[in-house]
Image (cartoon, rainbow, N blue to C red; front, side, top):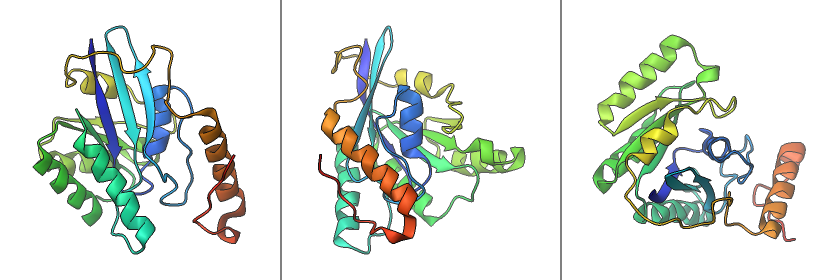
Length: 210
């Protein structure tokens, strides 16, 4: 049995939460077009015959302008400290920018194996995807996998992660998909609906208590 913790990191709005949901096969993390929707580290669990991957969905890494932004970045760096493998998500539909490069440099220094998911290939041309893969390959990480979290085309990621996990025990029951309590999930879904439907009318610092 191979098992371990895999933080999912990247800039805001590259599709980290959507990718975690697609990999786990269940909605464990809310999604929104607004950046910094994820406010906590959310764990999603995927169990196979001989492996268990605990994905840790994290807030988007960015240059913080507020105390909240600094706190969200701290959550990400805290999750990386316990990582067995890191899943680094970049956007195939836009150019690799300074934010991506800062994250890549930080991950390279960590010494932890990194698998790069080139997400949103459904919204990119073949040439754009090829360019992203070529540019990202300069980072010399463990593997690069083109995916579309939106269409659930995530073939290959699980295999690339599993072979790099250490041997270990199952951390959660085989049928678990998250460790979050039902009340938390309900509150997050309510927050997602408010963010999507009220848009600019609603403060981005919305919190929901159930």
